[in-house]
Length: 515
Image 1 (cartoon, rainbow, N blue to C red):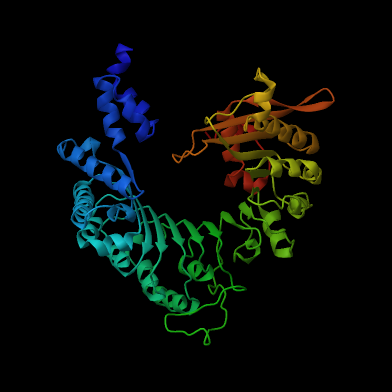
Image 2 (cartoon, rainbow, N blue to C red; image 1 turned 120 degrees about the horizontal axis):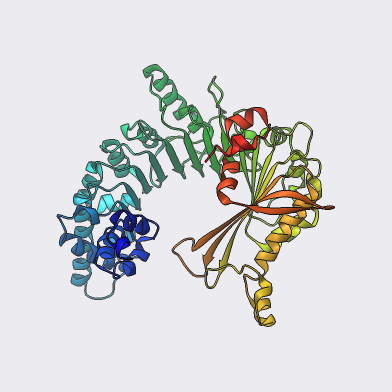
């Protein structure tokens, strides 16, 4: 133990495996633990929930002021909600204004000195920038931001984005009070020059506005070669695809396509709307991954991608030639069942089992026991003629204590076992494994990923349990023999690799090199 205490590299590795909240009690173990854990405890600051977040902000700033020379404890990640600058306080107006001013001064003080800040989330940023221009100037001058998320953007936020000196790799923009011309101005900002992943949330960009912008950029030779991942949430899709032609990864959720979008520019009235316009580029997109609602997949203007994720809501899945081409052309197919229409997935499983299908890896994401039960009732038999090599079942379990029982039969009290909310999950996941291994002759590997959350816990996942197994014959039956997760994850990556997607010939020796 003594040698461990004096090995600061090992202590740093241990603390990085903890959350900032977990590092606080860890720091009280010894002086060396305190030195290693203290800087990690302040590395990520999440401030929200009005008066509670405001109080934490003020106390943290006062603590940081005492260690101005110790740069290691200054935050590298900061999440701020605008509500902390206008906390819901009771009492005399003079006291409320004093508390609000202390919150503002604390946030400005942290941003002015956060030279090492790498991640900044600012929700309600327009309200924050309008409240105090000094905050906007601090954000503009932050030098090392690698990940930036601005929520509730408006005119002031677009101006901040346009003047930022940082060049983040990941950018998330949620638009509130922004016109199409302001949105297009934001896409010209130099801050996008090195962005590799862009998320645009909640903006219906007008096609003819975007087309003028596209034509202008083509004349100027403006492009974004670094941008590879684009996520659109609640947006019109085609105008953004025209603007960002070099993407390889697209996620479009709750978005609008030509069939259901009403395009209105800044000055258009509802009675004077332009005709619908589609994807106008002469160069088709070359996408490696697509994630979208099942009904929207056929509208993506690109050849079938090697990786396809379909999000299924409560509506039935209606088969079409376009959807069939997208599904059959994928090598990895991920189905995320968020609704109760499990039986309507039979059209998708038949596409997987069709003759021209390239699907070799199927991932099912189901978060309810009823969905799994209904799936097992009829759908595994529709995959009998598929050529699946690997299958994974992913789920998320919420339990009171944040643990998942390994075996429900281990409970001494039968009544406790029946009442336990998590006792059925292990047995259900084993049945999923048995049913699919028995039904699909081509299956060679099976995996289960179970994310566990504690009930009424807002701190994210408590733990994740991953298992991998190889399908082998045992007499007249087929069983799953455990293999290491290291080997399993190599196979997981190999099945998505260009090498495998090109040939569809599984080479286990080649798979093991994908460590």
